[in-house]
Image 1 (cartoon, rainbow, N blue to C red):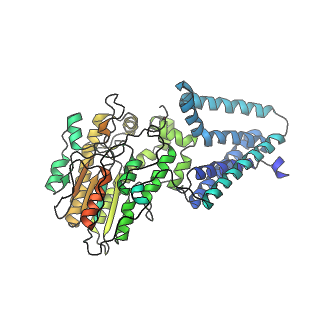
Image 2: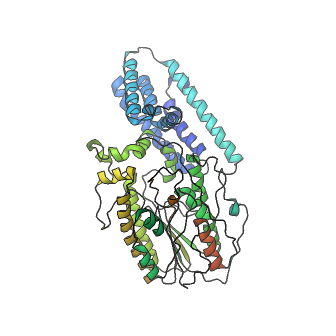
Image 3: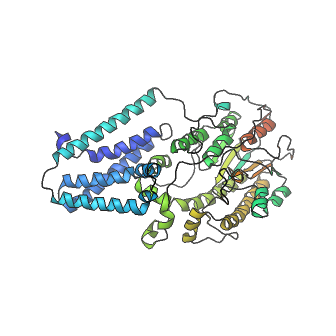
Length: 500
């Protein structure tokens, strides 16, 4: 029988890894994207098996060393998280120890396999049965979710459980440009905490904007903040605000994708233009990505190389052997920022038969800090180092660079589409810890400026938070009667992160 003699586990292992990730992120990743990732990992595993054969000249031994190596590769993230959460001695969760230990284990197994003369039939059958059982368990779990899908862990009950809006057929429908600047602090906070005078305010006031100087975001993490902002409701169902999980982030992605602002505007005949890092229903994100679909990043991020790239890639990129991988995911943020600005200005020039909602999400002045205030690009070593340390001065320098990009976009919109509404908002403030305050209030002090062509800013108020901004705008523009929610903040913290 093939199950006793053939290393079918070389295919079952990557299939199990991808299926398990699909089950954990059910509803967020498409079957097509999952299949593409699965095929890619199967081919990778078989390729390594072929490479291993040249050392052993024995397919069974090559398969055993391959499955051990690929198990480290696939499940490194799970192992790392387990050590971080359960082993108090941080030395054992550091990359210097883990990578050395993995290397030693592989060398020892390699030597043992070279000396073994037996055909390893028991090992083959055991691994085949083991991974076959795992695959069947996950297939069963997926089938259960398909047949009886449960409610999402997180919800925005204020809107999601009832349709509270009505369409306004007689209302004027201006183009709306929603420019989201990630981690941009309000000018009042910058002045009071860092003695920094922001030159953007005078420009915006001269352009006729209303600036809400005491605005706050409702959450200090982007995915949660954008979920609340675009759904005009607080998020319910977060089990532990001090240890939000990867599943929480994934669910926020679904909440953003199916958000109520988009549903409302779609019902009013708006064309949705998405220049953001998030998917919107029917309008996928336009970000640079590899040949693998972006959504599979939820699965791929747990692998060894992805985890290394995330945690210590900034350091590896400064070392000569790793400069081959210079264009990593960090540098893609720079290209996306430039691309989104170009697309926003292009949209301002274009005419459309339908009103448009243009959502552009810029990863600035959030680190990494690619440029100084004058637009001079920083070298890669500096970029990666600052990305991990997030110092104040480079942040303020990058904020001044960001201001010039904002001015260019606002000028282009005002000149080419003077009847458009502009919402200039940030998801949270600068998250730089200057003291040991457990829940720093300055994390929430954000940028909030709105331009109405009518210059009538009735309804806006100085201390408005993100959860109410679209309630006010939709009430005013489309004659709605959404009640305003209490403006409050919720401090969130990730589960234990990996040490550098």
